[in-house]
Length: 570
Image 1 (cartoon, rainbow, N blue to C red):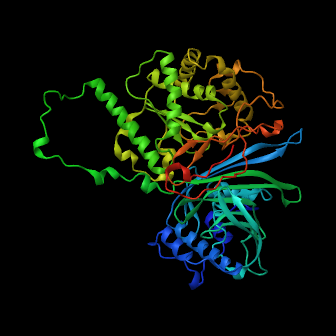
Image 2 (cartoon, rainbow, N blue to C red):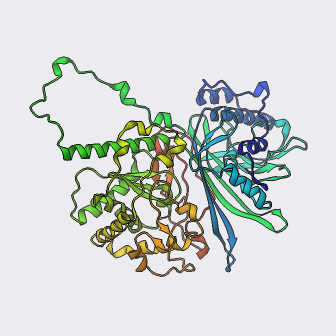
Image 3 (cartoon, rainbow, N blue to C red):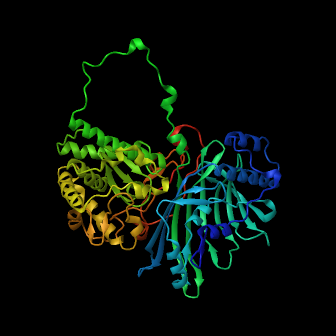
């Protein structure tokens, strides 16, 4: 990925310049789209290569096949970036952040459709005039890092075998790759890891070289997962710069995580029941008029609200914003049940819990469905802190706060995916938020978590402390913010919380991003990470709300549920 030293007048034009023109030798052209990944894999690996040169031929073929596969996929791509500075103790800490979410389309070169919007033409022109020596990130440039080279050919590169190495359970050939002189701009330079069965690139670490005069390529570490037979697809990209000088007195210092998911939205939303319809014979149909009756006004109101709720939940899952029902939901549901039972609350109608797949920290309710973001679940330090989040949302339901039922009309679901954050709004009025805070404290004081609320308050204190520097992490897109200025959700718990002691390794107020929730990029299923706890060697390893590199434990697809998912160690 590259960043521009001058504000871009056209995102598309700059991106087009940053990628080499796509061309292929006839002998190495991708297979037709109709061929499956497994069939292509079999065809390419029918004979084991007899030399390193033949290994390189196989790698080039697989990379071209990868590009052909990606042209037919439309995953969501999310990048969260933190600019860093060195504090008085010498540690690097975030002081500014940026967030991008879009859908990647590689059918005609990398393009995206943004969900969160980017600055308009006038804003970019203002930056051009007033920020001549400021660095501007190109959002899609991070997504470009899924591609080793859009025209990967042996004639453009020098290759050096390094060693064999395991990445998780996958044995790899490690090769250093360097572009030849005059091979063109934007060629990959770094190291690649190639699995030794079908010779797919599963990881590449480095940058693109050389860069044009007015822009810079960033360093990155890009990982692919084996999501289906013969298909290794991009899932994680980590990028970092610590001393990139782009002006006499300007140095770029940042960390960024890019995640991709939603590869199989069509399969996820396919109505399999349609093919299994059983038609009853006329003789089996019985007259139910003796028990059937129209819904009463109260029941009709509840049914109407549930219809609006279901429409919103189904639309968000179809887009790829909401994970399908799964094991994490059951964990959240257990905490909700603990709150209900210990407070002797019997609600009419089921309460459901779901996971929003994005990184910004937010939670909200859609009717009787409680939604918590993946990013928030990642950083919560313990179950008591999770109970605090769920108690607040549960209180909206218990108090009967109004849910706008306009979404019960199905035509309101007919909108482009990129308008989701504008069309779906589950924010609450400040009075409802304050009432929910008060009720949540009451629920928590009668719950199994009553003696552990200090950690929940400590989390809020850490969040309030970091909020000014990380506005995009705590900025909600669908619900209410946890912290706005001096106002923080559940301020009663905040007031009674212990003081933050950053130098204590035994005081964990919040976790780094990405340590708790594991996402399957193909099915969008989420699971709780099962990594063993790691003893901290120093206080700087606490890294609350911060970005860290990816090191997934790679496995091969075996078709047996979640075992195929690469594990991210905590």
